[in-house]
Image (spheres, rainbow, N blue to C red):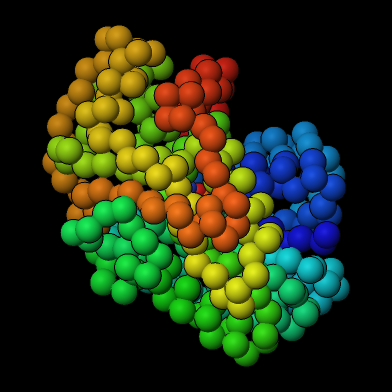
Length: 318
Ligand SMILES: NC(=O)c1ccc[n+]([C@@H]2O[C@H](COP(=O)([O-])OP(=O)(O)OC[C@H]3O[C@@H](n4cnc5c(N)ncnc54)[C@H](O)[C@@H]3O)[C@@H](O)[C@H]2O)c1
């Protein structure tokens, strides 16, 4: 199948591209190599993807190169678009909220339009657990997201989900909205906690924890990719699914797991960060029943694989 992956030079996109190529799909990546984090790292992630085979790559922006990107869509005629391109990160969204309207909403509208104009059959959108905001009841089920969120990043993702519904109706194509829960693993984004902690520990530095008894449903990258591939079987016009592990880990437990690899870990308290939710916990029943999604990597296994990777790539982590 011909697939356009937007954001294919990113953390999730590079792993996804490898998987698509291994499964015999034809891939075209559109990624502007945005400097939210190191451009050198993104180029390295493209090399990592290329180890699995050849793909077309266009360094273009869904936001600032509209005419060229539209031309790429129309000429390539993809059957599927997997739209991962965005500026991620809750903290940065508080400092620069309008960037999220541009990169997470406007760029998504462009991807949706060009997908429709090039007769795409299925559009997959990377949403986020952050759309649930702060909830009293857990685990989080798909219908619990109401737009009552606590960060500009989450507001942008929730808004973009709404545009997915609108464009599915306008162009009559299928959309899968996948809400990823804190993805980690080799080539994990440098701004994310696990990557930062491992980097510090490899350099014999302390780690800073934000909040007490906070919890995250950490999803190992291979399980996230399995979740994306499982969405190929989606049969609804618009289907929304949690892609997580279904097993939240408290921050204190994370420190205990890290101690198994770095016994001398020293911890500093950094206080609660604005825009963060206290806990995330995915109910993955719907994805399991409708898509056959079943994560298979335990947290201790995923963390060990991530540390093993980090030890071999110390100079490339940031
Ligand atoms: N990693 C996670 O834990 C997580 C959790 C929830 C949701 N998500 C979502 O999954 C997607 C992928 O996340 P990631 O962790 O791989 O992030 P990433 O930053 O590594 O990848 C995103 C890529 O998109 C590109 N990009 C951004 N704006 C663009 C534009 N306008 N045009 C072209 N390219 C553009 C960037 O250069 C980058 O390479 C994002 O939409 C993110 O919000 C990620």
